[in-house]
Image (cartoon, rainbow, N blue to C red; front, side):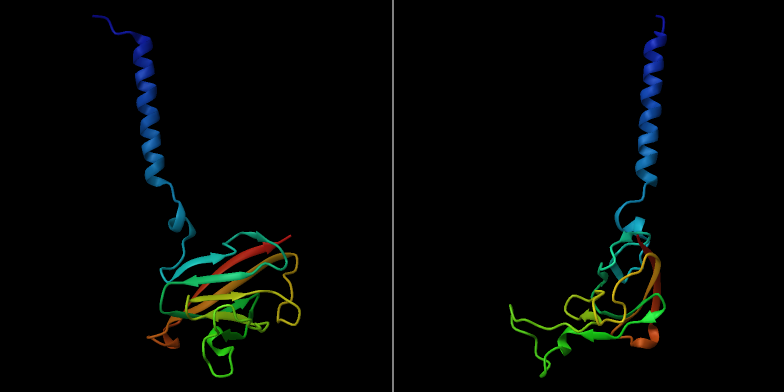
Length: 157
């Protein structure tokens, strides 16, 4: 029996397409793999290469057990822990108003360090152009002598 050339060409085209789809799915980077973050860091905002507004917050979210110091454009920001905001060191009651100082804030319950540019803060707003952020982080049990550094860049229009 003769082979139908049109059916053969369509079958080869479908087979080649399926091979390309399979290769694309195996080599594509998405999610956590695409961010190239260290294992101790779950997420950063803004992400590397992002464009942000002048008053955008910078956030680094760690896995459990880490603490950190944040540096932006070469300036190490003073850090305040949320559990230090009350006079007696007690955790504020749910719904209680807490005045946040104009520093980087470390939340020891969620292992997040963040910085919000604002009036009276070391960086009141991000100027137009490129900015470099770095976070020096360490496992609380291992101590600061085991600190590592992660750097990334973002820009403001």
